[in-house]
Structure formats: structure tokens, C-alpha cells
Image 1: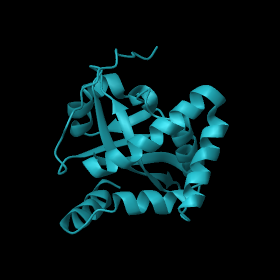
Image 2: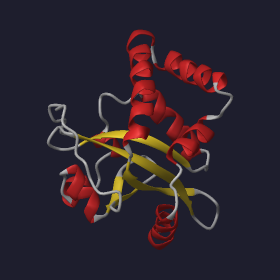
Image 3: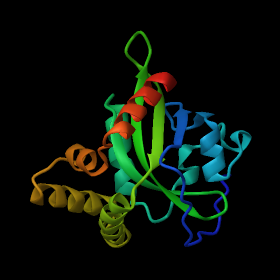
Length: 187
């Protein structure tokens, strides 16, 4: 059984220089975490290994976002997103998550890698408003209507989900260089 803490309205802030890394099997069960993951989430490595990654799912996150993420990953495509995670002690932290499938020699997906970094406040402000609307729609009308709302929002702005997220979270300057080097090192 997954431990679900009482949700607190207190944010965990962490350095934009810290990267949280995890690897899951194709069912989403955690098989690797780095030290920063434990430090920020409050879970020990032993508590995390074997658990579904949704142990961190904050109730403010629309299910529709995770549906889109899984749809992309299981079709073999990387995806990025802005995620509000729930720490073991009930506090929360916002991350920009770059997620990518890993393949074996036959081209089958064998695992999923996640590289996360602290989300800047402007990114949080933009996405939290969108997510709050999607969540309200989900609670009243279901996930399908939440997805439809997101699609209408994107069409109104003449942009795809990937383009929206990419523009929103695009690292700039030295951060972009560091992130690329770190991903290469960890892959």
C-alpha cells in the first residue's frame, strides 16, 4: 500500500542546480533514484525502489496530464512537462520533468528515465492556473473533458502541447548546456 501524507500548503524550494533523476520500468515502478530525489522528496532510496512513481502525485495535478505523458512515452517519444509533486511530509515541490523512453537492441521500450529540475516561478504561475481549471473540469466531468479543454486551449493559441511546454520551460544559456551534459552523463 502506498503511503499518502496529509497535504500541506507549503512549498519545498530547491536549487536550480540540483537535478532529480529516476528510472522506472515500463509499468512506472521505480528502479533507480539519485541522492537529490531522496533529499527533496523526503523518501529514502529503500522506500522508493519498487514503488510506483505516482507515489509523488500531488492531488492538484490533473490526471489528463499524466495520461498525455504516458501516451507519449509508451509510443516511444520523449516528453517534457511541469509537475507538482507531493513530498513524504505532505509539502510539495514543482519540477520541470524531461521524460524519455529507453530501448533495447530490438527497439522495445525497456525503461523510462526522468530528469527533473526546479521550475521557475513564472512557469509555475502559468501552469498552475491551467492545471486548476483542468482539475475542476476533471472533478465535474471526467478526464476526457479535461483533455478536450487542454486541446481547445492549445488550438486557441495555435500551438501543440509539446510546443507549449517547450516554449514555457526552455532552459536558457549555461543552464541549457549543463542540462544537456547531465542528461548525457546519466543516460
